[in-house]
Image (spheres, each protein chain N blue to C red):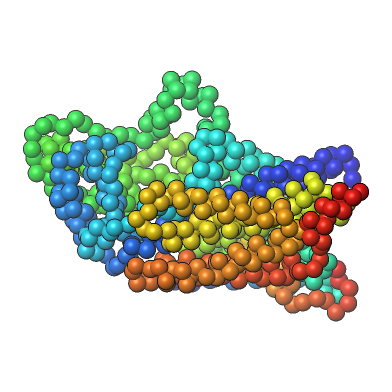
Length: 501
Length: 98
């Protein structure tokens, strides 16, 4: 191999290994985040999923807000959708800091929900590792290395086209793992390039804030305000009855499209200068720009609208849309979910392959033991941590103080225990045991759902249950077939042998 | 009509990938089977390519010109995996092959 090839191989192998430890859980969480509303629904078993009418739901929300917060300066209503079949209401004085409640979409009855991070937990972990800006920097750096690893991988695996459909599970283990790594990488290459690139683009301003700081006096939202028009005015202080919100909804949808309004934001209800802003969803467009129209609350006249966008806004938000997949419906969501998991599986196979080759060369040295344990903890530990979060979401008492914090503790605790276990076991033994445990937990998730449900089983929860069960079967198969018992010495023996040398 | 577009795209893509696989010498070598004539392999690869391109049409008709190509790309992934999985599921070749 020429020097360039060796350099690319080193970059691919070591870059893939070190950042793969982070990227596997990031991809796993990102795949789960595709179904954030469904997981949110599953984690809050108090939520119902009745048949609803959007207009009637808006009327119910308005009635609730008139009873609960008639004097509030701001009301916000989230309309129910098939993926989120509850009615969200919020009120307060600042649109960014509102009191929130969830209502049954058919009856308007308040739902007493448990406190939880919900499905957004996985989105937050995926985007910033639950660590704010520092997490975004780390994820952004990992995304850049991912792009480099993908490109170098194409050059390193020089028989990529020749071996395009090759997968030999019957071959020796190393070759089977290499086939799995190559096949998953080749099949998902367009997706992986796209998702890594768009992820880096989304985070670009976080790790390169200089332009925004210089051009907008350090105000991070100023550039956004330049693109997203805002239609507001001060209250008049004179009372004027607001038109019913379902009338505003119909008027807004006549402009934005039938069935497209996702949120209503009311400023100064029953004031002569009151306004009703209707925001359009982005589920049917690649570029995630949310058209909006603002109506005079008392007369229904159009006060402002934004249905055309700066071309650069379209271009940038298209990359956001490509990443977050609000568009395209169930087919694309499932493709993203499967492709994300395949990407994680590709990296996991690369980690296994790297460690097996290195272990054969250097033996079970202390350094190799740490590499093995990190690999197990990243892959199997990440899956166990996600499952622990879901179990905590259902098993922790609903009235527990600081409940979301305990669920987070379960997530991190499971991950820590996975790492300690992996350090104390031979690599294949740790892989097998932890993957089997993850498989059992995933297979039992539907039973947990049925045992702790507060509402009849609905399609959203059933989807989560069946997906978990299917992934559980897959994990069990991998654990049993790919990490068969009796192949390796226990870690303590290996370490003793190293000490004796 | 619309309900048939996605299944049609899947069929075209899986068919296209299967033709591509059948047109590659490596597939036959791994199965331990005699290699078809070069012309036959080339025709299979051409048919595979045409089927894959044809699958773009139902994707665009179903999802529009901006989202349709994304769906098509995602289905290519599914097609590669379906064909590679199918070949693997056919089992170990009679002799050699790896």
